[in-house]
Image (cartoon, rainbow, N blue to C red; front, side, top):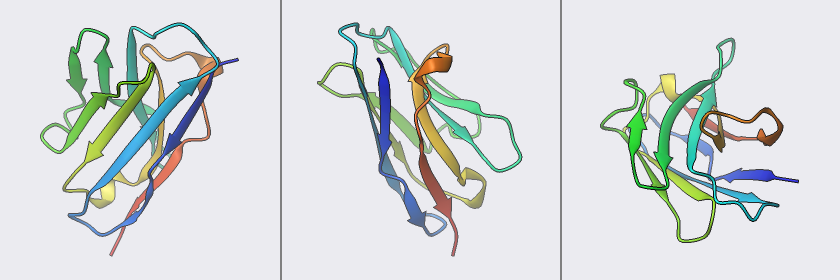
Length: 115
């Protein structure tokens, strides 16, 4: 059974930075594409960054120039470096395959940007 485990969230002041980590366990398959999604209160979950096994990267317009997605050396491990955070980035952040797989949603990690 695949488990996505996210970590690295927290409370940060506007303009601050955080680095999120995600590891998928329970599978011998290397996912072709993985991504970071987020869901803010009262909003739909959205894809903010994705990366393929070949290194093709895409970002949502709202995070371009501020967030950087990368893959780790371990299989199915990705990171999200988030800089210049603002209140609109407050959300629960999840990792999943791209496109997402319903059964793979984990608990997510809360990111709160507030002074």
